[in-house]
Amino acid sequence: MKRSLFMSLVVAALACVLAVPLYAAPKVPADAYTFKAPEGMKMTKSLVKFPHTKHAAVKCADCHHKKDAKGNEYGKCDAKGCHDNLTAKQGKDSYYAAFHGNNVKSCIGCHKAKKAEKPNVPTACDKCHPKA
Image 1 (cartoon, one colour):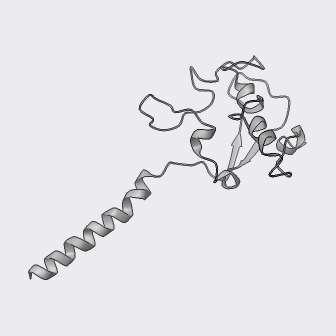
Image 2 (cartoon, one colour):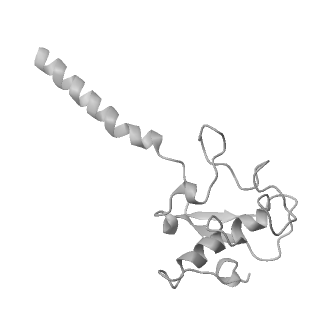
Image 3 (cartoon, one colour):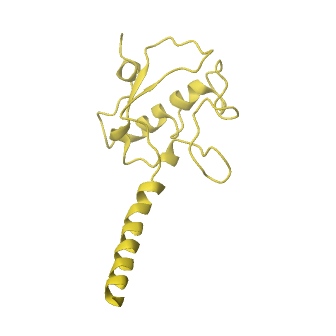
């Protein structure tokens, strides 16, 4: 009886240990995630389809800011106080610069930095914004 109780507890503990990473894993967007301009922003090019699985080797924090001071959940780029300036082309609060800036946290900046090691990484406008 003691042996079966002990084995049951071991199996239950092992199941818990294996299940924890499933609950702790960050929620990632689907591979067919499409970047859309926030309400109130005029787009001049087509929407960007983001291949999330191609970026799986990149840490989430390499692109995203934390939503709160405790580090819970990543916020959207156009969230209040982040990149919520929808008209400016430059500046930390510019939504446009979040994707097109020359720093490595932006899409274009990161792609340009990776160009030497990955020559096929897109940097031209029409590679991310295909003609409709």
